[in-house]
Length: 291
Image (cartoon, rainbow, N blue to C red; front, side, top):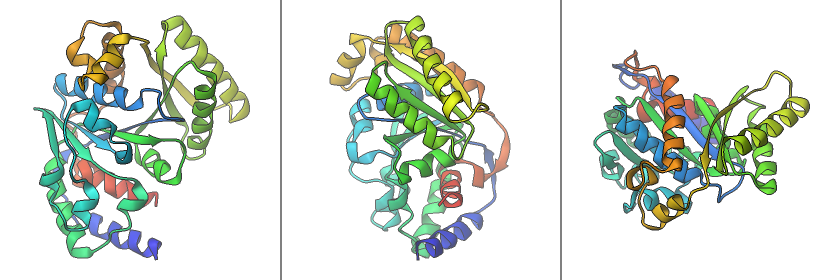
C-alpha cells in the first residue's frame, strides 16, 4: 500500500511544471545522539549562508523536539503535514527569519509520505514552487539512525555528522557513519564543543582510522571543521538568539563562519535546471526515490 502511494506521489512530482530555476543543494545535518549541538549548528550555518547572499531554506525534519523554533525565537503552529492534509497552505507554514532565510517546519519522512491525496498533493507541489529559487536547503534531521532519518540522509547532496569529544557521542557518531556508509560513500564530520583544532582533528582522525579499518578503506570521510566549546553558545540558546548574531566575534561564531565557507564551496550557484531539482519539489522528488 505504501509503495503504491509513493509511486503515485512520484508521478505527481514528475508531472509538476518543469520551469527553469536554480538547483538547490540539500545539506543534511545529523548526529548519533541528541544534545551534541546539531540544531544550534544547523540554524547558525543557515543564517550565515543567508548573510553571505545565498537564498537559504532550513527544513526542520526533527519537528517533535521543536529545536529550531527555539533557535530562531519564533512560534511554529503548523508544518508540512498540515499542508498535505489540506489544513494549511504552503505559504501559511513558511516562517521568514531574514530576507534570505526561510524556516520550513517539516516532519519525519515516513509521516510525510503517508499522505497521497492527489488533489492536495498537486496543490502542494504548485505552492511549493515559491521555494524553487533556494540555493541551499539545510535539513536538520532527528538524532540517531532510524529509517525515517535515513530517508533524508539518502536524499541529501551532502551529509554532515555532528559529534562532541565524548566517548558515548563518538560511539554513536561512528554507528551513524557506519549506517550512512551503506548507501553513500561521502560523509563529512563537524567536531563540536572542542577545546581547539588540535583536539578536534585528533578525535576525528581516530574516528576515521577506525572507520577505514572496519567499514571500508575507500570511505570518503571528511573533516568539515570544528566549533569550540564556548559559554556564549549556551547563553545565546537560553536567550533564543543565534551566537552568530549576538556574538559574531566569538571563537564559536568564527568557527561556524569557516564551516559555512566550506559548504558554500560545494554550491552550484545560478545553474538553470528543472524545478524537479530545486526547493521543496526537489526534496520531495528525492524522498520518493529513496522510499
